[in-house]
Amino acid sequence: SQQGEEDPQALSIQEGENATMNCSYKTSINNLQWYRQNSGRGLVHLILIRSNEREKHSGRLRVTLDTSKKSSSLLITASRAADTASYFCATESRMRFGAGTRLTVKP
Amino acid sequence: DTEVTQTPKHLVMGMTNKKSLKCEQHMGHRAMYWYKQKAKKPPELMFVYSYEKLSINESVPSRFSPECPNSSLLNLHLHALQPEDSALYLCASSPRGGTTDTQYFGPGTRLTVL
Image 1 (cartoon, rainbow over the protein chains, first blue to last red):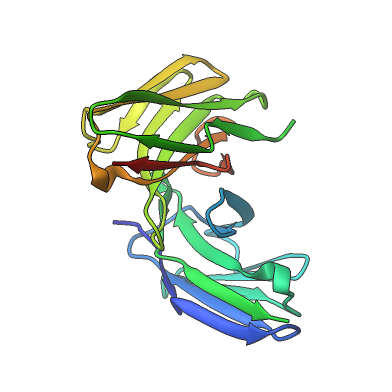
Image 2: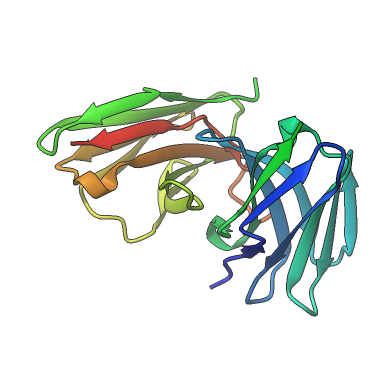
């Protein structure tokens, strides 16, 4: 299975702090994507990183990919209460999502 | 228009009912997806349509029947469901169904089976 597995399962931080979530996967990939889901809603695409990329930025988001360790991390800097959501990584094969990290940002 | 719409938002049905979930996009995407999501779990892929043809069926029970009438519409017909089928059903679309595609998700239909 190429399913990603995120850790931690849950993360609670104060507004303004940084949040780091990790994703591990089992087989070789061409790319990995991160999505956000607000409670009970659809998922929103955040960022895609290709296997030949090591780091990618988008606004307050920074994603890294280490293909030798089969892992990726998502860093959200200067978090806001509106960042409260579940975050999923997904590998491209049949869009299998990991278990997700539930992030709570306290005002 | 970068929106995927789903109707209804909520659906309550009995185990003997027949109902349908609808999904629509007008982004010109040629791949559409159905996912099932239980509480505090990740979405699980059910079906993929690519260029209006069913390309992936993740061994979904026959009580779920997908239909893609045209490139903008995707239906999920429900019949003789079980209470354990209660979940959030998400529809998504992507430009071509390729491995680098970004998927655009609808808000989901919250289904309760009594």
